[in-house]
Structure formats: structure tokens, C-alpha cells
Image (cartoon, rainbow, N blue to C red; front, side, top):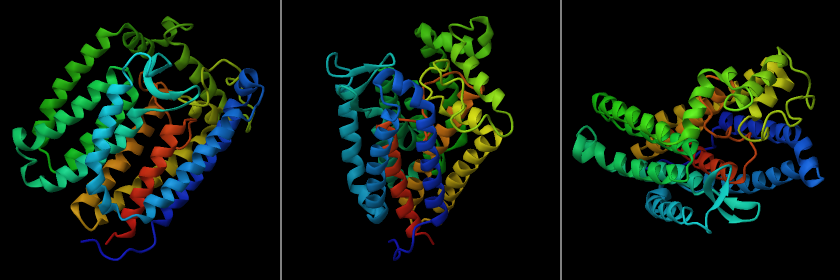
Length: 365
């Protein structure tokens, strides 16, 4: 049983607040030109981001004060609902296509991404399941295969959209959780080899994925096509230098870098605030992940520990992939920077998850 609760982790709260504040400022700076051109209102994107931030903060306050043990009951329900939504979004005429992926449910510009909800739902369910089955996790058939099969089914549905970025984050956070629960490295290593073969198959099956790989390996082979995003991103980061061009002074946001307020917002931040600004943001993320790991270690029970690992994993994996793409160290996957990039579903859901993490910190030993 969890002991009486105390105050939530103050370092975690400070890092979340600062990252969110930086995100609102940079969303405005990155999107003002595009918003004025498309909607005649340079505040269009930042106003919507602010609304979703308020909703997310409300959700964070609620989950921060709701005992995390309740998610043992609701994790299974959330997972079932998310599986249903992942099927519904694939139905033509129901799921909305944006950016080449049928991954949205909603009307007009308002919508939700079921894949974003699945990240949290999968972590909630696996934390409960693995906490109860920890004695069998070292057994391949009875312990490891069931959670991997569930994760694989969710990943398959997400890839039918297709949405490799969200699928990769869900798989990464889930595998981290499974490893922490005590799965054998030999089992995970063998499955990793199978996963690599499967990933190669997925890349070959879709020409646009193969284009992203070749564009990543040699962007200058097709600077106006496959390599365009990476080149424009590096054009933003390079001139930023040590201190940047100044807030609001980005050149790449003038229709050079596509959708600068979402996947490549770190490029704009680095261009305007330089290496110092980018390093400061990465440091805040590092503090958030560190406090999440500390919360997992000090959690009063196995469920709380695994749940903290999963939520921290969602943040850490997503940050690594996004910044890796932006600096040209990874192929383009179409994934946002947590708490910073423009996006309603991802922002609100992540703040909700961080509220759960803060609640676990209140019961830490």
C-alpha cells in the first residue's frame, strides 16, 4: 500500500512549467508568419496552443491529485477504447487524412489522434499487467510474449494509418517498461533482430519511407525533394551560432522550413536562441527525465515504479527522436517535441500523463 502523500516533486513541476512556457513563446515565433498568411491572424496557432495548454494543465492538476492506484482499474478500459479508436480512424470517410496519414478523428481543424491516446493507455495497462506477472516475465511464452503481442497489434494498427513516429514512441516506451520489469536481455535481443528485419520490410514496402532513409543518408542528392526538410533544418540551426539571431528573427520560418511550429520547432528555437537556448531546453528535458527516473526508483510499489518508467519513457524517447531528426542524426519520422511543438492531442495527453507521474512522486519513499 502507498504511504500518505506529500508534496509533488518541485523540480519536475518547475521543468514542466518552463518547457511549456518556452513552447508557447516559440510556437508564436515560429508560426506567426504562416498564421498571418493562411488565416490573417498571426496569433492563430498560439491562441489554440494556449487553450490546449490550459486544458492540459487542468488535467495535470486532476491527475496529480488523484491516487495513481485508480489507473489499475481504468488502464484496461482505456486500452480497449484506444484499440477501438485505432480501428475507427482507418475507416474511409471517418478518419481524417492530414500530412498523408489517416490518423485523426474530428471535424474541420479540431480533432484527436488515437495514436497519442494509445501511448498512455499502453503504458497504463502494461504497468498493471507486468506488476502482477513479474514472476513470469523471464519466461518467453508465458511472460514476455503476451505484452509484446499486444504492443505489436497496436503498432500494426498505427502503421496502417501510417504514423511511424507515434508507433516508435509507443514501442520504445513499452520496451523500456518491459525491460525494467525484468525481461531477459537475451529474449529482447533476439526479438530486436526480428524487429530490425520487420522494420526493413516496412521501409521497402512504402516508397516514401525509403525516400526518407536515402534523404537522411545523403540529403544533398535531392536538395529540393527527399533531402529538403533536413537541409532547411540545418540551415536554421547553423546560423544560430552560440546566442542565435534573436527571438522572432528566424529566416527559415518564412516558408523555407515546412510546418515550423510542429516537427521542426527545435530548428527555429536554435536559429533564434542559438546553442545556448537549445542546450537550455535540452537541460530542462534532462531534469524532467531525471526526476521521473528518481520517482520510479522511490515509488512505494511495483505498479507505481513501472508506471513512472513508462511515462518517463514516453517523454525521453520522443525528445530523442525529435531532436535526432532535427539535427540530421535520424531519418524524418514526423514526430513532435513534447510540450513545445504545436498540437492539441499530444500536449493535453502528455500533461495528463505528467500529472500521474507527479502523483506517484507524492508517495515516493
